[in-house]
Image (cartoon, rainbow, N blue to C red):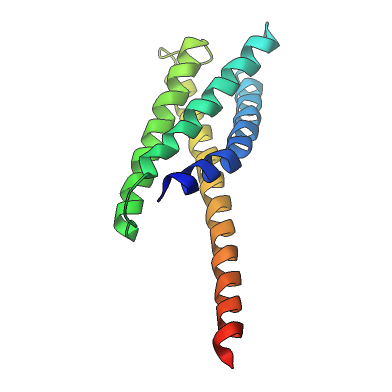
Length: 143
């Protein structure tokens, strides 16, 4: 995946990641009934989480096209990096406590859920584009 494609994906996915992070954090706080004393700090932390999570797309950078297996490995690396970043910020903000394993499991589950949604939306958009390009090429070279 080229640099231009990565930057395009980063810009596109940033808003999905940020929105997903806000919704996941809301669900998490509803489950564990933690108070949010400083909303500005919380939103800033979510923004940092989204930006750092978005920067992990550089894992997909490659000078050559990647085959399916290479992409699968990079997706796994990307998911792991995303979980580490999100858990680090959540720990720093004291949203999760390592002494409470249920909190860690729920938080990681929410991160994985947001990740899967982002991947599915991205893949859906890519499939729509590929189908449209295939249709255009068939029409062009039909006659």
